[in-house]
Image 1 (cartoon, helix red, strand yellow):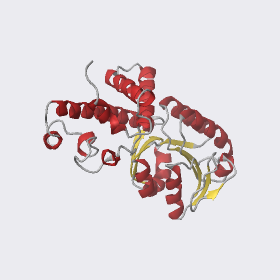
Image 2 (cartoon, rainbow, N blue to C red):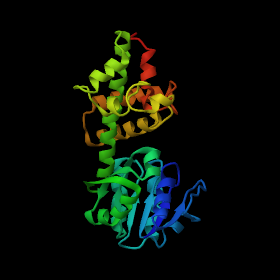
Image 3 (tube, rainbow, N blue to C red):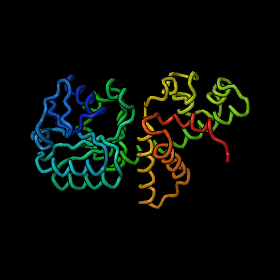
Image 4 (cartoon, rainbow, N blue to C red):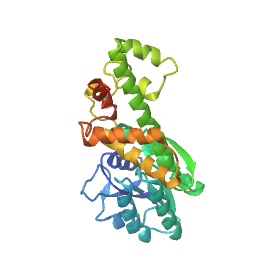
Length: 290
């Protein structure tokens, strides 16, 4: 395929590189002038999109994703696909989908899970919203960039799946960190805590696969000074998106709201910015109820 790729940051660059390595012709554009191996640099977003079978965007937020969509949709040919892999709000994703439809262009919102490591290794998980036809068109590209692509329904449903998943993740990580901090103060050895919880009803991904306690369980950012695998700043972004969506549809999410507020304090008022989201554990270690 001819692929336009817009947004060559930490995630976008390795995704575009993998597509080029697989034999696709990739024309890339990034506002910061970033280039990557195997990807031909374009002078603008419109230039990257012109003549493309699929245009892929990986951008920081909904406002930028909307702006880029407004730029590229007029130059894309009918029957092609705009594939947005950014994590943005559901309403904006559905608005872009509607505009794409007006132009006769397929739209998929396909946020990812797996981080930079997954992007480099081509093992990302894509949560995809959009038509069955557009999903089928993009499936060969998902197979190159990732390991799993789940079609979640219509436009915006990929974003819905992402923020619901990450709301669970944020809530669960806080609970895991609170429990370790409590276990410490009760005199319970961390390894014993892990051995019990990881094999009983407290089992969770944040305990078993991404344990926030250094030296316990499989390797995780806790074993590397909480250098981000998934930054607390990004967790806060996703939790805010979950609460924006909850407000839009009048859903009661008290735990999601509490997790959002805790990560807001951690990132904006404490030392959480630039650290892994599991660095909540040392935060709780030094706190008391008062």
